[in-house]
Image (cartoon, rainbow over all chains, first blue to last red; front, top):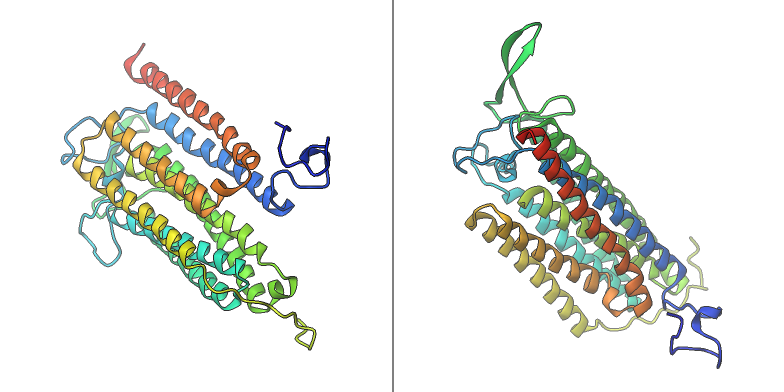
Length: 255
Length: 112
């Protein structure tokens, strides 16, 4: 591995000190390894979701006849089918698709900010960072609506039978929380809150970091420093948040 | 924040048109794949084939985000592999855990 061709002094490899073998600064390298560890955290969450889901029976009936029940894991597109201002219409996955679009677009504006940073173009960095922040806040607002809808539930609710004090009673559950869940098994709601919540928290801290970068850019910190590398480091984090959403979107909403 | 006469002279370079066009192209590819995923979601019955398509699409998207947006494709090879190789453990973990889940399902619901 250390037989690199880029030796500085004859007989010494790049790993003998004095140069950085990976060709990036310390901060950027550490950001990469932090993101790798964070990828393992998210994998742990999503794979556990897969484990629990595959240990529950799947819905086997007709797609159109689907009803919420505690007996089987719900079909995701039957759960996420509401869109703000279009009450009562069934538009499966449309809103989540919109959220995906918003996050991908904010990733694009971030990479444009990085490009502007390479050119020391302060005005362009300001513009693209601001768009990135707007994208992040829009995504978080969408998620707040999504959570509210999930917690409040459908109008009809789901009627379940329960064995209370020695007799069978039926009651109607509306929405989901950490104690009960109208959409299916309790684990389904728990994973929804934990995984999208953990991702949302990443987006939130990403917006804070982006704002910090924006503030520093406006006040000329990076011009004085002579380098816009901080934009790149926070950019890596922001792209990672987008990357995680791509996986959450597939394994939580599509499959 | 001092803004006195010792402000550094910053040389602003013109936009790299080719690079910017390339970035928008990558964005276009990502959006196309997402639209394609939507079409699949509503035109194919649930099953292993559909799941396989989704997983492949997701990995392609992840490749573009990490390779182009995060610039990993253009970094030193040592860094590239240092980030990529550890993710093999994730694949192993995925296979092991989902297999475990299906066995749990057999025990819980089929009475094996």
